[in-house]
Length: 456
Ligand code: SF4
Image 1 (cartoon, rainbow, N blue to C red):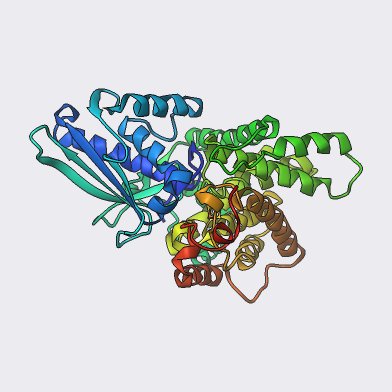
Image 2 (image 1 turned 135 degrees about the vertical axis):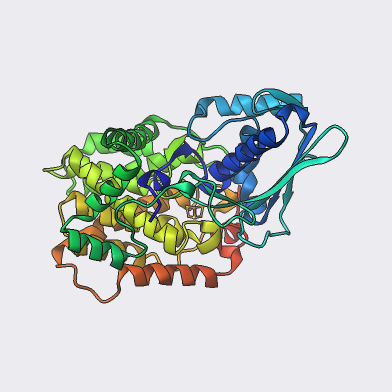
């Protein structure tokens, strides 16, 4: 499998990997290509059309802002989250945008950036089209893109994604399914996390892999810590109050009295991350932004509450969770617009459950079993964010997913790993269930909570 752990865990900004990170990358890819074909200075006008789910919930997810930033030459990994409001505000006030940061054009909304909420492009619900024109009105380049979940993008009529895995040679252990992964691991007599690590070493030096994992884990922790100390109302107009900081304050006072206090902390960690995500802060896709709280919360729980926890356990956790995420990415979908929230929080739960088994030193069979449980009990979960914002039900849902992941790990570790439904079967079931779901339940905010809850 040519996916890397760093494709699954990507540092970016909130609130959405498919609606913010993907469109920013697509806009950046487009202007970079224009610059290669005909220097960016020859562009007089750029037009952008958003379709399907991107048009229906794009405003709440900051898709328009992401496109402005991508056209300006910004990328999600490096942009300073605190600078975004000022940058976007300036573009909108001036009605001028510097393509790739160096060539000013007039850019007005909605003339040059349109939300086509009645039209969907054929390949995926998250479609967008960019076109660049010269001063004599000739089209320099026109290209459709799809944001296919987890910050991955794909150009129309190209079968391979535009992300770094596109041209990567295979690592020593190629696996497409959980069964193949388990079989390779059994033959090599290695834990799953070592299989993933050996593949990573085909693409990066051991030092690069280690520092990359440290960077991911440090970014996750920094996100938790920021969320645990930041209060106020989340942006977007729903008036949702941040709760993680207040909860953490209470828990610090109560510490030691309640036998389930660790679970309260898991809730606080997960909500802290997703409140940061909802406010456009720096997060790690795991496997998406909307589901970014589950993996950090379960990992932090391991570090904080498991007696023999150590940093090597965190490496095992991330590598194993990443392997599980790759299976979903390869064989199903991690896009809420394609398969509902089972593909986001459900996958995150599955990843964290299997990863936690590895952190505890469980067997490969127990990893597979825990990951299967983590998804089995999220099957059918819809994506119906109120007001198109990644806030309700998303923030609490991450807390529920994290607690469920810990429980799945416990169930699997109390048994030998023997079970009826395999991880591959549940992945296939999730995908089929997602395809059967009406589009109103797939990140369109047309049904479910989004329809039956009054916005105020
Ligand atoms: S409901 Fe789930 S899939 Fe939908 S935006 Fe929220 S976290 Fe993402």
